[in-house]
Image (spheres, helix red, strand yellow):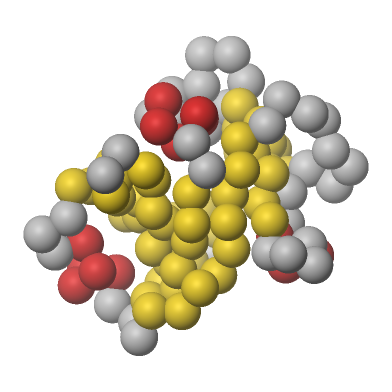
Length: 104
Protein backbone atom coordinates (compact mmCIF):
# COMPACT_ATOMS: atom_id res chain seq x y z
CA UNK A 1 0.00 0.00 0.00
CA UNK A 2 1.13 3.54 -0.76
CA UNK A 3 -1.25 6.28 0.36
CA UNK A 4 -0.84 10.04 0.00
CA UNK A 5 -0.07 11.74 3.33
CA UNK A 6 1.00 15.34 2.72
CA UNK A 7 3.09 17.79 0.76
CA UNK A 8 6.06 19.54 2.36
CA UNK A 9 6.97 23.03 1.20
CA UNK A 10 10.19 24.83 2.19
CA UNK A 11 9.57 28.38 3.39
CA UNK A 12 11.32 31.27 5.13
CA UNK A 13 8.11 32.39 6.89
CA UNK A 14 7.74 31.82 10.65
CA UNK A 15 4.36 30.16 11.26
CA UNK A 16 2.31 29.71 14.42
CA UNK A 17 2.56 26.26 15.96
CA UNK A 18 5.89 25.27 14.41
CA UNK A 19 7.60 22.23 15.88
CA UNK A 20 11.37 22.58 16.30
CA UNK A 21 13.47 19.57 15.29
CA UNK A 22 16.73 20.54 16.95
CA UNK A 23 19.10 18.01 15.35
CA UNK A 24 17.85 18.85 11.85
CA UNK A 25 17.87 22.60 12.59
CA UNK A 26 14.36 22.64 11.17
CA UNK A 27 10.95 24.03 12.12
CA UNK A 28 7.87 22.25 10.73
CA UNK A 29 4.13 22.69 10.93
CA UNK A 30 1.69 19.84 11.53
CA UNK A 31 0.21 18.84 8.18
CA UNK A 32 -2.68 17.13 9.99
CA UNK A 33 -4.14 20.53 10.91
CA UNK A 34 -3.82 21.90 7.38
CA UNK A 35 -6.96 21.69 5.24
CA UNK A 36 -4.74 20.91 2.24
CA UNK A 37 -2.27 18.61 4.05
CA UNK A 38 0.61 21.10 3.78
CA UNK A 39 3.66 20.77 6.00
CA UNK A 40 5.68 24.00 6.00
CA UNK A 41 9.43 23.51 6.53
CA UNK A 42 11.65 26.37 7.72
CA UNK A 43 15.34 25.46 7.83
CA UNK A 44 17.86 27.26 10.02
CA UNK A 45 21.14 28.42 8.52
CA UNK A 46 23.60 25.53 8.65
CA UNK A 47 20.94 22.80 8.71
CA UNK A 48 22.48 19.41 7.93
CA UNK A 49 19.47 18.39 5.85
CA UNK A 50 20.09 17.85 2.10
CA UNK A 51 19.80 20.88 -0.17
CA UNK A 52 17.08 19.18 -2.25
CA UNK A 53 14.85 18.96 0.82
CA UNK A 54 15.60 22.56 1.77
CA UNK A 55 14.79 23.98 -1.67
CA UNK A 56 12.26 21.69 -3.39
CA UNK A 57 8.76 20.73 -2.25
CA UNK A 58 8.25 17.05 -1.45
CA UNK A 59 5.30 14.69 -1.54
CA UNK A 60 4.87 12.15 1.27
CA UNK A 61 3.24 8.74 1.34
CA UNK A 62 2.37 6.26 4.09
CA UNK A 63 3.68 2.80 3.17
CA UNK A 64 3.26 -0.67 4.64
CA UNK A 65 6.91 -1.65 4.24
CA UNK A 66 9.52 1.12 4.29
CA UNK A 67 12.36 -1.23 3.33
CA UNK A 68 10.48 -2.47 0.30
CA UNK A 69 9.56 1.10 -0.74
CA UNK A 70 13.28 2.00 -0.75
CA UNK A 71 14.40 -0.95 -2.88
CA UNK A 72 16.02 0.22 -6.10
CA UNK A 73 15.54 3.89 -5.22
CA UNK A 74 18.07 6.72 -4.91
CA UNK A 75 17.95 7.20 -1.13
CA UNK A 76 18.34 10.81 -0.05
CA UNK A 77 17.88 10.27 3.71
CA UNK A 78 18.15 6.82 5.29
CA UNK A 79 15.31 5.66 7.58
CA UNK A 80 15.04 7.49 10.90
CA UNK A 81 12.44 8.00 13.60
CA UNK A 82 11.34 11.64 13.97
CA UNK A 83 8.84 10.61 16.66
CA UNK A 84 7.80 7.50 18.52
CA UNK A 85 5.90 5.05 16.36
CA UNK A 86 7.03 6.46 12.99
CA UNK A 87 9.87 5.60 10.61
CA UNK A 88 10.64 7.99 7.74
CA UNK A 89 13.00 8.00 4.75
CA UNK A 90 13.44 10.19 1.67
CA UNK A 91 14.31 9.26 -1.89
CA UNK A 92 15.02 11.37 -4.96
CA UNK A 93 12.87 10.98 -8.05
CA UNK A 94 14.21 12.99 -10.98
CA UNK A 95 15.81 15.43 -8.52
CA UNK A 96 12.69 15.89 -6.38
CA UNK A 97 12.46 14.53 -2.81
CA UNK A 98 9.77 11.99 -1.96
CA UNK A 99 9.06 10.96 1.63
CA UNK A 100 7.98 7.48 2.70
CA UNK A 101 6.52 7.00 6.19
CA UNK A 102 5.71 3.78 8.05
CA UNK A 103 3.99 3.38 11.39
CA UNK A 104 5.96 1.04 13.63
